[in-house]
Length: 266
Image (cartoon, rainbow, N blue to C red; front, top):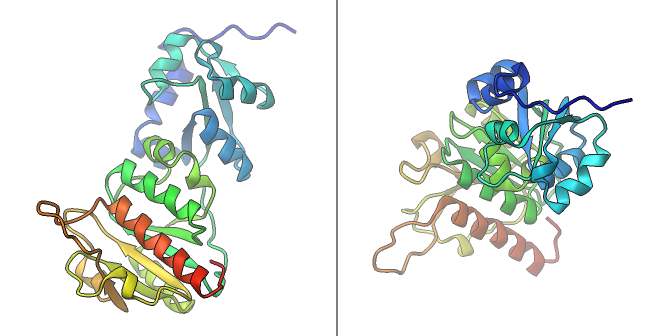
């Protein structure tokens, strides 16, 4: 059977749909996300996400994309110009998929679970970097609150290198998040630059929730009333705060360190 000819027209309805899905409003309306890149797609598949459609441009394939593409079943081939039209990347590797928006349920936490709560973070790069750190540190999950960056937007998926699919990322209302944490006995730690207590002096074992807000506004007042407030010491002459993704990584690995010292698994 002859394979269908590649899509070359930039006016093709499928191309137009892929372009529209780069917008958050369209993704939310359709319940569909874009997954671009061989690494990200492989991690989504490993997590059990089933693509609705896969698009490929062999002329752009990286070695990883060339190896993955034949395993994906029915693939729609795009010309180079068509793929570059729909891609959100400067140097695409020629693989892109459509999939249903994940709505993972948070599993019941273990006694040493660490959960990260992100309130209103707007920069996809920061959200993606925090997801990578949380995955690497073995966090239980991520709670996303407020109207910040879309955790399943193309730029967050890219910045996380697919880690968004490796651990539960739940979008919640503030009330639902507070209820979930309270019902499961989490101790909450608000990460804020003006807290008098440094993060390495806090007992970060047991069920811990790390609360992080935007860099310019921090956490809302109602979330600063956590069980504890923690800061990261700043000893430089010009810097008065750290990038939120850097702060999250420090906090997460302090949780890991304390558990290791006490012989406990996260």
